[in-house]
Length: 416
Ligand code: SF4
Image (cartoon, rainbow, N blue to C red):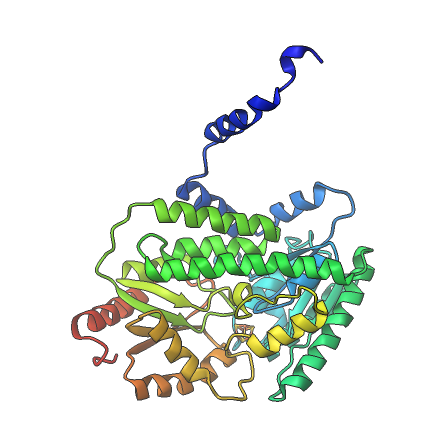
């Protein structure tokens, strides 16, 4: 090596600074555009590329709402969120396997599978959230008999110790199967490392949540949604970096606040609303300051924190003791209404929008309880339903616009 190519130690720091100056940080527009490309990536090309980077890599899909992605990661595989086909897939075969009066997500998920778009996945996890997902898991195993599938039986008991013991056994069973599939048995240290990475991710996601709530003009809900949704396809550390980069860019952006009404959106924890629906709510005059979209990224309140502990036990206890309230979870303390009221107060929201998928039993069956709680507290609310492939938004725009105007002009006493 010639002398001219050797870096002298005294030059190294300057060189680093100059390199940083040469590589510009991505802009907010670039970050959102990247996230939107991932949102539209139904062929899972990002997953295919990840697998192609090292021989033998495997990826495991999972349905909403929540699965323990830490276990998949600790087995050396990529967890991949599958959230149906949205408004991008024409259902041709998926309809043949389900009755008419159920939600859309199982049909479009089967359509994705039958059309080969999920071929990059080496297995699928189905969390126990409702009968529809249970039926989908059975249908999946019949149609894709050679592929790995696991029904993640989430605890639904009022006895926390019993629930934690049960869930810990379930986690160990899943870890043993995934370890056998990947050829990397899940060691305690590997799981602690994975939990730490997901805890970091959760902290970044919560920071984004809080920032959006404080400055919704700088981080509109549809942008934050895309950034959060990228967690479905990106490795966890890359997603954490994406969230941090977006936060930095959003904080630096100059977007003045508008005279919009602050609302909490609830009911959309599984089948996701079309992106255009979020834009419609914002254009109708709503700032969405809290929501339950993509709940899996924040299904546990706070970090799991497995340092020095048995990681399986820590994961199980965190889910059982600090899992967030949602319709697909049994709530022995009957705090669901109170949880929603607490969220409204903490985020200084002025009203609640019930926004649930058509035929979603868990969301629609708990809605009357939540409505009663809001009425007792004098919190305005309105409700509508959607399906992931909804294409017409005019009616929702008018309804949300009227609601936003009402609470802005006449305050919380004017219930919808
Ligand atoms: S949208 Fe509702 S009913 Fe449909 S699979 Fe999800 S939780 Fe179940």
